[in-house]
Image 1 (tube, rainbow, N blue to C red):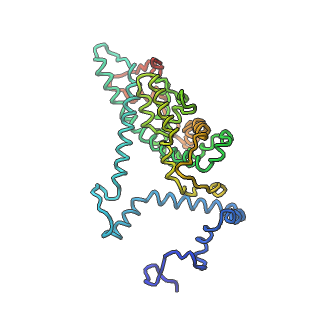
Image 2 (tube, rainbow, N blue to C red):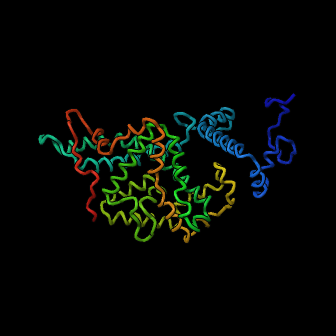
Image 3 (cartoon, rainbow, N blue to C red):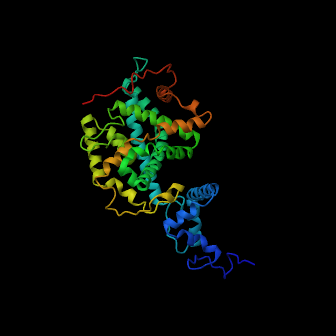
Length: 372
């Protein structure tokens, strides 16, 4: 009769030196990479895909239930557990700080974009105080924009991690010829988008369209490049720097200052500051089968990325679509979602409409500003 886990004779400590059948899986993973690949290559494809699916599901279940797992460990070892003076007890101060930072960043961006969109709105009645009327419209538009950009912030954060891991996995390919990789992130982008509910996809679509329109209006299109560091574009700043960096860039009052901000960001890339999050990915999880064929090469913090490689790396990033093509593909697979995505002009008009407004005159909300 097998021993139960609560039996005092039961020992669940892994014994790597044991030859028992229950430990063969652990010993298998310790084999040299070449032998492991030889074994995997003889496994039936359907079994490989099944193992990969199970691994992903288990990985997702653990991450989705992290709070519950932490809570359980705290209960089991309450005497050794630290005390957190937090509302829920399961969420750390870092979690709350990061969420507050997200809200602050997205609120700033929503304010900048709402102001840009409503600057040229014209009241229908000459009796209205134009400044007060326009400020009222700006405040009405900020609320839906904040919701949309909080969702878009989460998408960009996940995309950034995928980009950094891709740089790790395909390091030599990026150096040799990044163009051969093409839009390899497109499927990863779709997988990220598929994890969002349908209403969040609508938020991402509206945020993405307004962001592009206001970028053009601010003469800061996604292709705008640094003068000192080629391939350091607005798109690269958006992917690697996030919405906070993008907000700082488009908030600059002149084109000259926006270029200077891109130059400063390019200098950060050159000196390696932006790559620090990459260096935390020393042991990336095996989230896909293609990792098995990748050279398991570890690098020190001083090795990556070499300055000679940065041009190829940034060019690779600047060729990604962020979410344009992948969002179309995912939305088309969601019945009814496409009908809920409004043209940008109508979206803005619906957001700022008040009782008594019969129509909305946007007067080229995305027309370019003074380029100087």
